[in-house]
Image 1: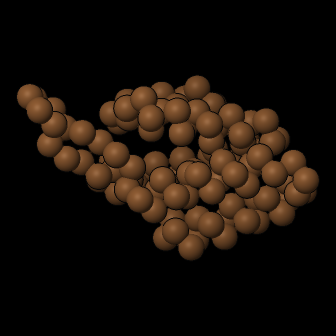
Image 2: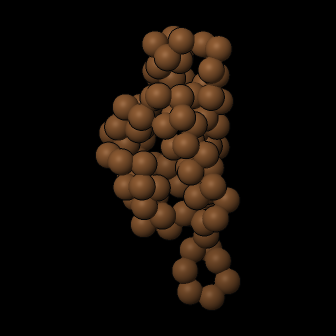
Length: 107
């Protein structure tokens, strides 16, 4: 899955601007850190679970609903963004830490 496809998938599921900014940050950090392959991992292990597993869905004034990431999903994405940006750590070690983070977050 490409970076643009990943972002569009989340936008298609109803992400607001703050959520989109977080996703763009994660994708950009992975891309800049030479870890674009981790996008596929996030897609299959997190996004594939569907909207009810990754979003809290609440009522919004008028028609529609307000989406926010579930706290564990947001924490996971922020940690992946942080790890991907650690240029002083070898990519293999960053990938191992991302894997550990996914497992600890229940993904």
